[in-house]
Amino acid sequence: MLQTELDPQSPLAGTLPPRLDLDRCALFLDLDGTLANIEPTPDAVGPDSRRNTLIARLARRLDGRLAVLSGRTIAEIDRILDAAAHCVAGVHGLQRRTADAVRVDQPAHPMLDTADGMLTSFAASHRGLLLERKPGALALHYRGHPPAEEACLELAHRISAAYGLTVQEGQMVVELRTPGPDKGDALLAFMAEPGFGGMVPVMIGDDLTDEHAFIAADSLGGFGILVGDARPTAARYRLQDPDAVLAWLEEAGR
Image 1: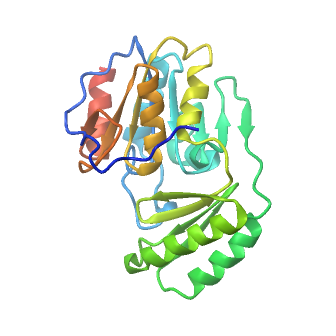
Image 2: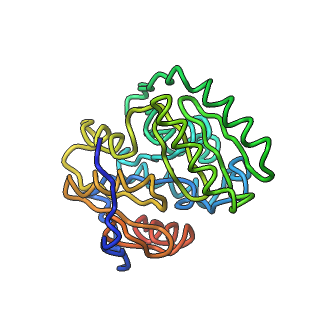
C-alpha cells in the first residue's frame, strides 16, 4: 500500500483546479465532505437531486470512467447517490464493485468482534460518542463530544497494537479496520480496468483518508483536489466546500 505520512512542511493546496477535460480524465470522488456536507450523524446524509443527477450525467459523459471512493459501505453509497455511480469502492477500499459489476471484498479480520466489544463499552461510558459498524471496520465518531478525541485515538491505537487491526483517522472519527486495500489501492485497481486505462486520474476528497488516492492519482500522471481549508496534502489543487465541488463539476459537464 502507498505511504501517506505527510510532512508538516508539505505543500498547502490552494490553487483552483483547471477546467476538467472529460475526454482525457477518469474521475474519482469521495462522498462525505466532498459531494455532500458533513452531518452530525452518518445516517443524516441522504439523496440529493442536484448531486445525483450530476453524477449520473458525468458518468455517461465519461463512458463510465467515474468511481466513488468512500468510507461508507457500497450499500450506503448507492442509497445516498440513488445508484448514480456504477463503479464504487466502500469502507476505504475494503469493498469494491468493478466496472463489470463484480464485487471484490476483503474478508473481515477475526478480531473485529473483540474490538467491537471494547469500543461499545467505551462509547457507552462517554456521552456523545457514536460507534458505527461496517463490514470489516468499526468507526468511533466523536463529533458529538470533541473533548473525547485524545481518549478515542489512544484506545484505537491500543486495540490496533493488540489485535493487528489498522487505525484510520478522519474528521472527528477514528476507525479500526481490517488490514487491506485503501482508497489509493482502489484507484489503482480501477485504473487497471480497460475502460479507465490510459486516462488521467483526478481524485477529489476532503479527509486524511483521501491522501492515499491523491498519491495514487499523482503516480499515474493525474492529480488530487482537496476540499476544505488548506492543510498539508498531496493534492495539487483545492476547492472550498461541496457546493464549490458541484459547481466545478457542473461547469465541466456543460
